[in-house]
Image (cartoon, rainbow over all chains, first blue to last red; front, side, top):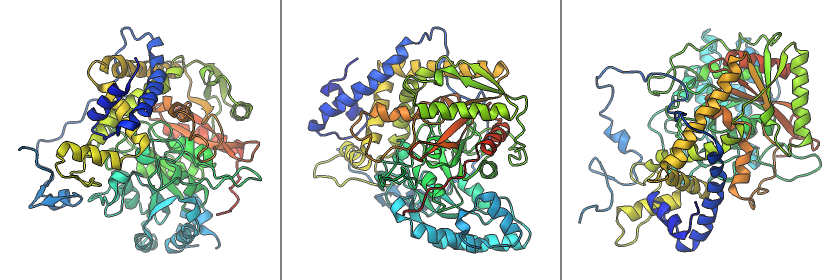
Length: 95
Length: 495
């Protein structure tokens, strides 16, 4: 599977990272190097093998269905680049 | 008492309890050492005032007879841990200015134990790197140099600042985290001890996430005894991390008997890589001899899927990273790019992430995005998770056959020069983790400790791998190896 500039641009878009057009050839090349390395996995016989979901076999703990914290609006917003009137502020989303 | 900062945790603890020194004196000695070590670029956020406050409080506790193991001991905290009101940037520009409103469970446990925080330690950006060179702060520098040279060497990564600080006696010990080798490789490069505990032993709550199914915190120290003391203080069940396991934490220090008579130590043949340097081969063979002389039984073992660990890791870790790092969007915390007229929210995300993430992080996020994307999920991500199952089974089979501990080299070489890998492709850098990454994939505990030096006078380390949850036995075996190796060398001060 080879990655060309169009595919590299598509991946960058999916990852929401702006990549300038002149950087795409080098990026595609790096992807191909890394994917070439990953391709080794095709040599492994994985017939009937379960994909790992948890490295430690365990049931997730259940907690009581009660409110444990909250009312921390100021703390939640404390690090926001732009917070107004108790909300996170972002550029207009709907015209 | 002179040069208090050169003590380890056990020695300093005993000195404090005996009243031979105070936490304020110890802390002051470390702060002085840090101030004169800016050339190492290990500490990137300084918390001297907080440290003196904590030291004063610790001295009171000690006087009152309430002195838990870490009480009054000055340590450094990796920048990946969220520390309340103290910058926690994960070595990234995207978290510039971020001040956590809460304390990570591990750092809180250390503080509850009386530990003193000297500051935050340099690291590869989001723990993605093996040389500390991806850090927004610039690389930390290894206090060790090749004999007769002044080339700056990497302290390894990602916990490079932690390793450099401990090796240079800027602190008594430090926290690290390990996703593919990020505690053990820097420990090996700096002549220090680093243990990655079993997955689930230490809470990940408040530790900036890289690859959640692989990340574990652990101590980086000057001796195996210190590692036992500090791990005990860091470990334990935490309701805030659903993957933390509800098991009692043993008294690791008390378990350090160093008696390994009759223990079975496995030597995996697949770790004898083509082109392995003579130096590393000899280091490994010497380790085998030491353990045999200490009464252990040495057995050859096979871990057949070893070769596929790195490729599987470089699917799974980027996949999880692409998901975890989706939260850095310029909305809730950290950096937001300046926008041009007409830019909407998508442009804001894209510019923020292009400006905020460094090159290696961008690359891994995009690789992760690719392997999770429609049409490739099965071919890459699911296949890698199946291979991970097989890698774990390799270890289970070996342990089921009666092997107690596995001995391997920690790294394929001694520390390399900063910028030396700049021209190579990314995969060459990834090969640094070849001996360590299997342990993360299988969720096992692993410890690196110094057992020899290279021809150029640099420290070299071996790795011991234990059964899940048997850190106590692993530490005791490491203690036996440490005693036999008798590695006492320190970097000569040039900084």
